[in-house]
Image (cartoon, rainbow, N blue to C red):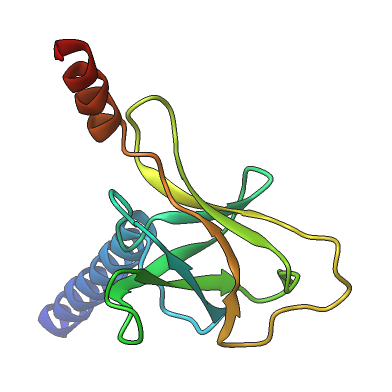
Length: 149
């Protein structure tokens, strides 16, 4: 009887430990388990430095993340960026999406500037106005090339 009680206590301890490890892994890994998002796309001339998982912000407040980035099948010279926006956050249909850098050489993220429209983007809508990121390395190399001539 004592052995059975000890085995049950050990089993309960192991189950609680595994559940705690799973919870911590999900919280620290920022794993998305829910469907609390809706999708929006934006087309950029260049998405250099932007990566899946990067943040999406309005006025400095995190409202979503970059889901994935592909080459636009309709136009092979542009990047199509799929964004996951938190439900409850409404984006106007004249919003402007910009790729920005946090800090001088920090990570890239998408910044949304709301427009003045009363209409909102539907699920799977497309942001029409975009601003690509500035590639600092190419700017510096162009500057150095112009000084060398």
